[in-house]
Image 1 (cartoon, one colour):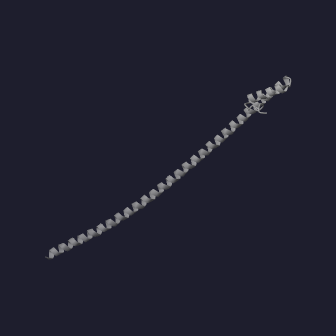
Image 2 (cartoon, rainbow, N blue to C red):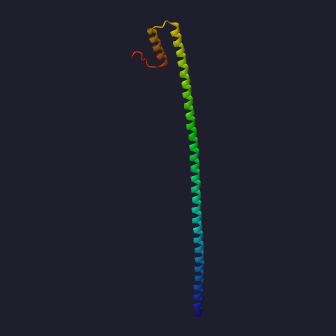
Amino acid sequence: MEQRKQMIEGQIADANKLKAEAGDLKKQYEGMLAQAHEESAELLEKTRKSAQAEYENRINVADAEAEKIIENAHKTVELERDKTVQDLQSQIAVLAVAAAGKVLGEASTNENNRLLYQQFLTKAGGVNDADSK
């Protein structure tokens, strides 16, 4: 009986030892799990910040490109407007010289003046308002 008692006490001691070792392993596992969660959260935050920085960088680049496009469009419109104004001024000058030449070359009468005025407006693309007077 004594042997059996010692054997049972030995088994209980072994079980307690295994239980203590299992508790230690559980603590190690829980520590490693907590560390893994912490590292995961840090990595997620780092990735989020990196993505936000990349997003802001791309937005800034797109804004700069849009500004350049708008600026170039304004310059193009301004150049086209200036060219159109110059072309119109040139055409008006030619028409004015032609009208002056006709006036000087022909006898000045009211009918001739009215016809010259109508021809000038027709060539210049204006409205004939001589009839409305």
